[in-house]
Length: 163
Image 1 (cartoon, helix red, strand yellow):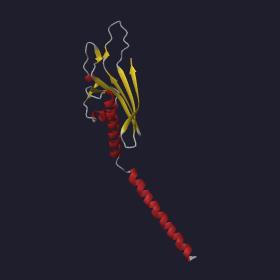
Image 2: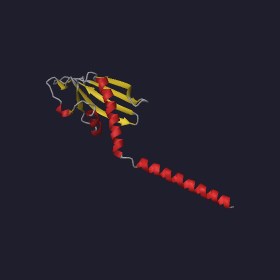
Image 3: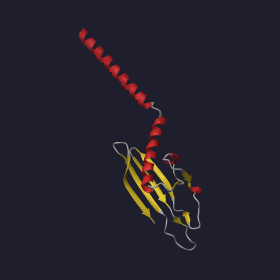
Image 4: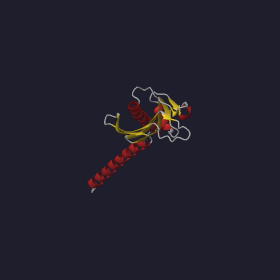
């Protein structure tokens, strides 16, 4: 009887030890700094945006413009790619175009796990003349990127809209 009692006590102590370690691991992972997770997401988004920008403008000559609906996180990520970024109201208007050639607008960029979607728009977008219907709206570029097993972002699909 004494051996069964000792064996039961040892099993109970072992169970408590394992439970304590499990709780410590859960507590440590749940209290990891949220800033580190946000920084990782921001770095991931910036790296994926850089891949999309390089595909759309490999010579990096276009001026990057933040679309009016671009989130603050996507704007910060786009700005950290090494390109300067303008507000959409800072784009010069010309007599011929509402969005001139040489500009590349980022309308949105979203990160969801190992997938990023980016929407870019290239000029020129000509101004309509009074009384004339204009069907020209520039060139839209959509990119879906996935994280490869080595951590690099690669374009898994792309779309183009020309109107």
